[in-house]
Length: 113
Image (tube, rainbow, N blue to C red):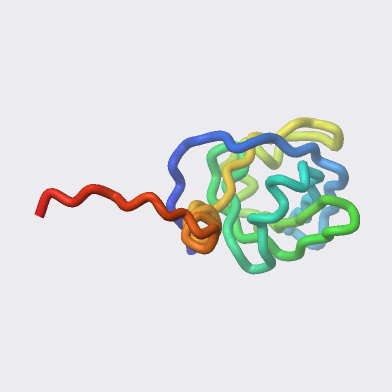
């Protein structure tokens, strides 16, 4: 897996739940609707610099969740966070590109060819 991580922070989220299931850790995050619009189930999100796969999106709660396997928990800082902690979020750039292309932006880009 993985995606294009640019290192930009688009916004923040707040951990609303952390639940262990076997040796996996499920984390649910609340964020602003302006970011949630770019987050899709089975899509990508960067959380505190780590590229992760989104499991589900809960539009009514402005939340999404993801799961960390045991190996990932040992390698990233997210697993050490607590409910109520803030997380830096970077949404997948592809959603931003699609929105831009579909927005009807009409100014041509100058070509040097």
